[in-house]
Amino acid sequence: MAKHHSENSTDADNQQERLGMGHWISGFSDGEGCFTISVIRNLTTRFGKQIFPEFVITQGAKSLSALEKIKKFFGCGSIVLNKRYDNHNEHLYRYCVRSISDLQTKIVPFFNNFPLRTYKRNDFLIFKKALAMMVKKKHLTESGWEKILALASSMNRRKKRF
Image (cartoon, rainbow, N blue to C red; front, side, top):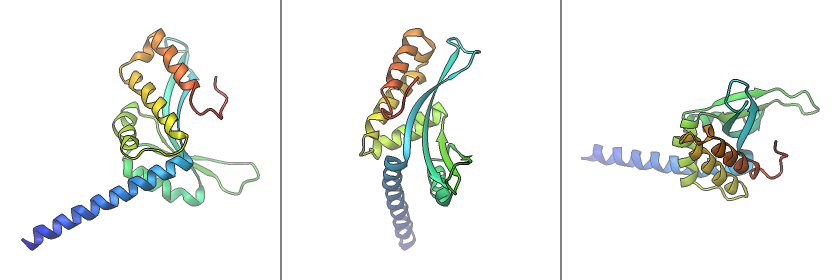
């Protein structure tokens, strides 16, 4: 019986640790993350362009371990090196999740459970709506394409779009 009790405390400890990690990732994403819907030229597609949703967190090389922890937590995505050649000393790393499936089944449910607290929450809500349309293949119709572009252009207000 004592063994069963200790297994429960381990489960409770793991759950507590996961909860703490969830709050940490949410806060980290509020500061360093972004949700984007990009449009790139792709002449092989119906509209000559392709829409792709992305969740990204960018960090300097000194904080690479934080990105590795986040990647391990979600169990998806990739970490990409962006070399810098300006007056900054360290290169940047980007943790990116681009898979529609991973975004829909891992990233969106996570941020539903651990909501963002800054203006990025609004970007997340728009992103979630556009992603749901893409899951239903609405981006393959002209009206769906236009709606998703309109949603995308209302995100990340500080950036110039299209």
